[in-house]
Length: 285
Image (tube, rainbow, N blue to C red; front, side, top):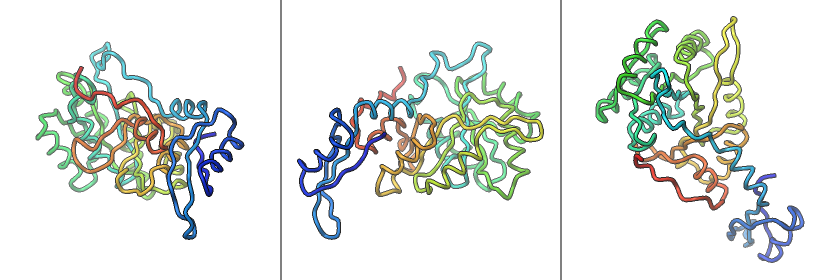
């Protein structure tokens, strides 16, 4: 059971209802006054202490390794996948150019999005302005060489991918084969906060691990919700993230690169009205 909302004529009445429904360890997270049919009501958001712990545990990602670069010298690889218009390219730029996102680790960018007009050029511009190494991969045979070039200076590589369209199964299979060759350590499913929950669930299933033609494609390991700033009520976003049952390392809440990038758990917990620890220092350690 997660946080629930209760409404009534006065705070005492509403708190009593919450206690009867959720037990004696219920916590009132926040209150507000709302109108229903023109009548003012008190609304509270309540949860048990155990529910709060469970909500956070489901969202919390594993910490990054102490050394981002692996023992064989390969950079830690983070891929962004998701539907068209979700904001993958802008998010990739934010992750790569924001100072301190990965501590003192050096970042690079790689794109598989060679199909969308302007997508590759957009990412190349961000990379040039921030002096971040950038590679483009068109074919599976190019993956090893591109990663080798990036590994000379980068500890982390952010991978941008094309938006998936149900009508382009052949192109989808091609870029997913490229992604398999890269063998990313994390695959973040990028979804806009404006997306309907039922569509989000369908998309999440389509990006799950699956086999096709004897090939096992790696599925999404994390969810990354974008466009927080475009929705009036954020509790639905937290519900969406929880329903997908994947950890959330980051969210985005605007178009500015690199500033509109935030730690995921902190922001999603706040969407529920939950008080959490202060946001971590994003400057290099």
